[in-house]
Every structure is written in structure tokens, then in C-alpha cells.
Image 1 (spheres, rainbow, N blue to C red):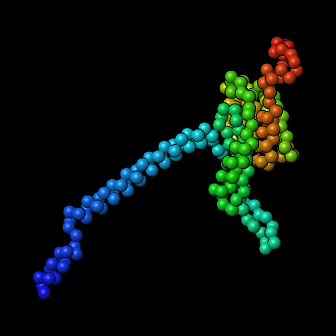
Image 2 (image 1 turned 120 degrees about the horizontal axis):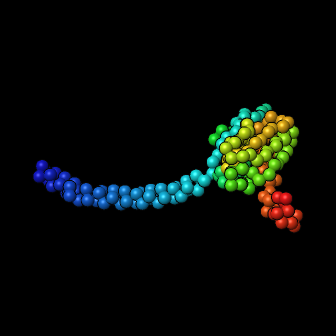
Length: 211
């Protein structure tokens, strides 16, 4: 009986040389496939980061707001975000969500949908004086000499810096609301025209404008 048991046990148990080879091969295949997927994902992620690195995002204000519904009040967050590449493109966006992170993401997406192209001079300033108005907020923006810096405050300063303007004078008139001031600054920047564009619209030469 003992001999039969020993023989049956030896038949049931596989050889030690066979098991590691099979498991090792599976592990190598898994590691190899996972490594390739990770490498490919890393490359894709790197390209996405390069594209996103061109844009800078700054949160101007985060407020907790409420909406009255049938069952009571629904609380959410509102984020005002300014997006720009410091090369003449800037946008202001607003996002609302149940959490702060979601509100900021929506604000960034909204800001990229409403981009404004700003004409910049050689001294990183604006070509002419401009006024902007949104609601009760009014903003005055005028060019400045090299080395002046950004003389502005609040959300207007954030908009001008992300637009790439380094020498400018700005004054807030009227409302102190950050959203209205940021939008008024966007209106002022959208109304800027270079001297060439102005001469082309009037049908005259550049010399006549400077004279």
C-alpha cells in the first residue's frame, strides 16, 4: 500500500523543472507587454504636457454660490480663471461645479474657448490707448515706456501679465467686481489695432498717421 501511495503521489506532482519555466515565461510576457504600454503611455503623456505647458492658468477667484431649487438650496463653487500663453493670447473663463477642482477645469475650458489675440509692440507693450467696459466696470489701458512694468491691480493685472504685456498702465474705474473687471480688460484688449491695420482701414499710408 505504501509503495502504491508513493507512486501515485509522484505521478500527481509535476516536475520542478517544468513549473518555473512556464511561470517565468508568463511573467516575462506580462512584464514585456506592460513595459511597452507604459513606454507608449509615457510618450503620449509627454506630448500632451508639452502642448499644455504653452498655456498658463491662474485662478482669480473661487466663491461658494447657491441655487434655489424645489427641495431647497443647491450649493456649488464658481471659479474665475484666466488662461494665456504670454505671447499675445489670453482668455477669461468661468466654471461652476460641486467641487473646486471641477469648477477650475470648467473655467480653463471656457477660457480657451474665448481667447483674444492682443497685438504687442517690440517693447512688450500695446500700440495705442484703449478703453473697455463690461457692466458697471470700466477699464483704461495705455502703453508705457520700457522698464515701467505692469502698473495694474486685481484681475486686470492677471489678464495683462498672461497676455504677455510687460510695460503698461491700467486704471480701474467703477465696479470692483473681479469678473467684470477681467471682462472689461478683455474688451479693451480686443479693441486694440496696430498702426498698419488702422491705416489699411482708413485707406491712408503709415506716414500720414504718424504725421
